Structure formats: C-alpha cells, structure tokens
Image (cartoon, rainbow, N blue to C red; front, side, top):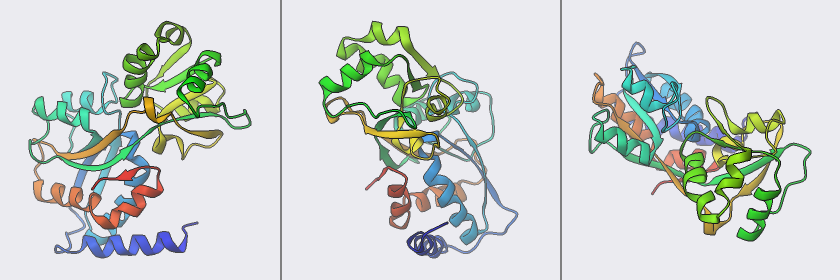
Length: 259
C-alpha cells in the first residue's frame, strides 16, 4: 500500500508534468530501460502518463553486452525506441554508434553495487576490503549481472584483488533475469548487482553495498534516439525523470538522484 508520503510525491510529480499542454491520449513513446533504473521508472512512468496522456511502451534490457535482450542488441536490430535509459558508459557508446542524438544525454541517478544472500542465510561480513575478499573466497558460488556491475566485478575488481582465477571457477554471469532471483532459488550463495535491482527481490537478504574502497558508482542516464519521430515528447519525458520532483522516488529505490 502506498504511504501518504508516496501519494503526496506522486501528486507533486503530476503537477510538475503539466507545465506543457496535455498531450492527446493517442500519443505514445517507446522506451528502453535498463534494470538498474526500473523500480524508479515504473513508478514515475505512471505519474507521467497520468499527467500528460502520453503512453509509455517500455521494454527492459541490460545497458551493455551482446545478450539478445540488451539495449545495444535491440537497437542494432532496429527495434523501435524514442528514449533509452541505461548506464552512462553504455549510453556514450550508443551516441558513438549513431543510435542516440549527441547532446540529448541527461544524467538521472547514480547507483552502487550491492550484495545479497538467500533469505535465511547469515549475512557475511563485507565491512572492510579484507572481510569482503574473505567472503568471496569462502563462498561456494557467486552470481553477478551481465551488465555494468557484473562487467566491473569480472574484468576490473576481481583481477585487482588478485582473486580472478578463483572467482572464475565458481562464478555465474546472469543473463536475462535479476541476480537476486538466482540467489533466491539457491543457485548462488551470494549475488551482486545494482542496489536498486536487488532491493525489490523477494527471497533474499540485502547485505549492503560493497566496501567504498572497491566500489563502482554507475550513473544511469537517458537519451533521445536518432530514429525517434517524437523528439519533443521524448525530451519532455527525460526532463520529467530528471526533475527535482522525481528525486524522492529515485532515492526511495536505493539510488542517488543526479544533480
């Protein structure tokens, strides 16, 4: 049940969205969003459509990687999109590839990499880098995402910590679903993903963010595609998602609003 505070926030968002004339109900935008921004986006999308009449048709995918459902793969197949929301690194690549209009990029939120265990399992110690490494080495199995956070762990962090070989032998790169779901089913002892992607999952215990000294902050950003036929409406949605009124919703999902 939505709290009174949540209701008031959504009312404020609706009022903010009507700064421009209300669109006709028949209009719509196609949006591709990465998992990290999903929880905030789904709530904000309801307010945006209610206030503007602009329907949002949304599909989800990873910010990077060659999985068929990733945002880069979808755009390479010429799937329709007016707005994309993903990790800034992935968005910059889409600009370079000609999929997103240069200069349309807007940062929305930043997110930390977090860790989870199956509900009922004792949360391991990750309060320091030494404890974090010990937890990784003691874990029977590890799962991480196929997107930004998992790429960081596998290609940067594990090698830096000197445990890349050990982790390769017991790690699973999760494609097409939330890491938390894999952990909840008992298919991995510990899992890593953006905090905002772990918090909504039932059947897990969120342990916390990985230590600051080895943390990677991911910025989620939005951009207008080069194939859109509705650039004004696309920009309007992005302004709405980046507005001060959207900030409490973003913060409530475990992210830090940009700006």
